[in-house]
Length: 116
Image (cartoon, rainbow, N blue to C red; front, side, top):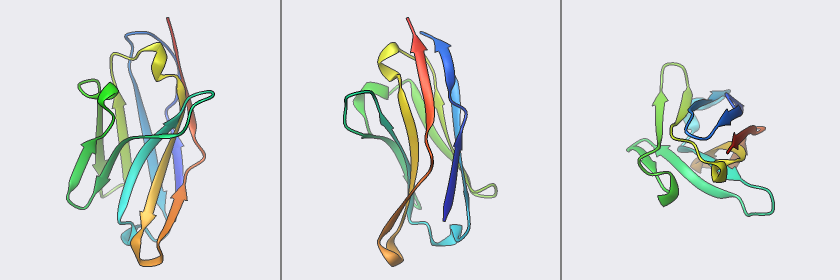
């Protein structure tokens, strides 16, 4: 499984960005796929994710502002980020988990910078 993340950039507070994570390879083996982020000096945290049962936002700080969705035909997961805040500044990574081999696959990350 290979993941390609894109869509990051520099935006002012209150603005929006949409991140994309395109999966390729053995995509039918993917059990779940999720967005994580890592801010400077902080641990990587789970933002939102999708399983076969649906998609969920996990971090309280993004509820009501971020929405995760998936397009199964395009093997792509999106993270729509609205009302961005400077504290959302981080590198955003997508991760796929394949239960059959109990392995995580990470994308390369995309930088999101929110200016105040």
